[in-house]
Image (cartoon, rainbow, N blue to C red; front, side):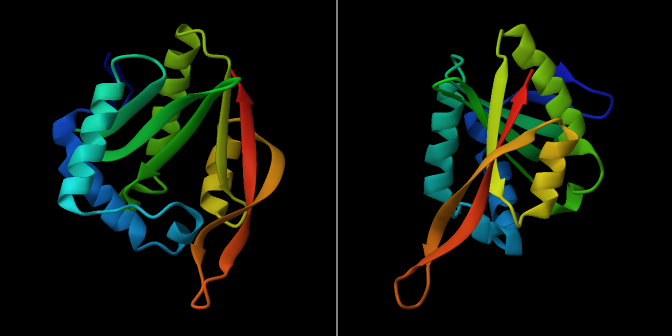
Length: 172
């Protein structure tokens, strides 16, 4: 499956995409917004294994991982993982491509594809303080359905660093 938009090509992630995905994670880890997500290990072997597992998972529809490409460059990815009553999505784009509409363009095409697969409900989680992600989800039609306390990191004393996370939903 390959999707084409006006500017982008969207295709399943392949095992040999690992170096490009590593670049996305290295970039993401430098962002102040990374405090609101699980840390991304950027060790070559770890990334290689993880992306190989993503590529292998692409054989079905339980987990779907897509590379979002501008020309031959992977500028981001999107993941769709089945949950009890729909799919949860996750995404990451290199900061050099933020603010240009690529994330919205690619996800609108992916949502059309999901509808064709019979998928009718998507959820996404992000920190309420991650205003770029909250704005992006809102622009796609997602609505905040609940908030929850989330922690991925500990302070110097070993205490959880807690923030407010939002759960967003979109009915396709």
